[in-house]
Length: 154
Image 1 (spheres, rainbow, N blue to C red):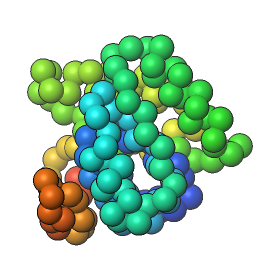
Image 2 (cartoon, helix red, strand yellow):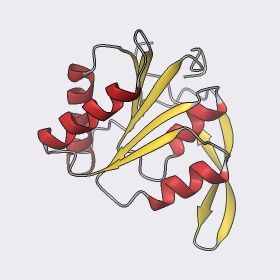
Image 3 (cartoon, rainbow, N blue to C red):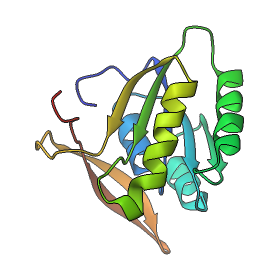
């Protein structure tokens, strides 16, 4: 992500969790976000607001449900402008029990949204650096370091 201009695109964070990948993209210049997860998104919303991100939308639902994915895509495309670049970020991993549904949902987003031009995911640590991000943990604000990962072979 460090080598790309993220300011001109809409970030779709599939399997966002607490939003740390979206916040990393924000720290790198992105300004518009679509956060998608099967779990409660209140922590992600709180973390986005705490970091002064104002242009974000959240979608909570079953990432394994194609109807949910298609509905989410329609809403994202309704907000996008013609020719707007879309960037998909996700925590694609090799642990089937943890990432299998997120992997399939991410591929479905990429299939349904032709404007997706870049995909960033968890991968191999190449020590590109870290970015400080404020997140909420319980009742306390903490500073976390989000490590930047590079896609294998890029």
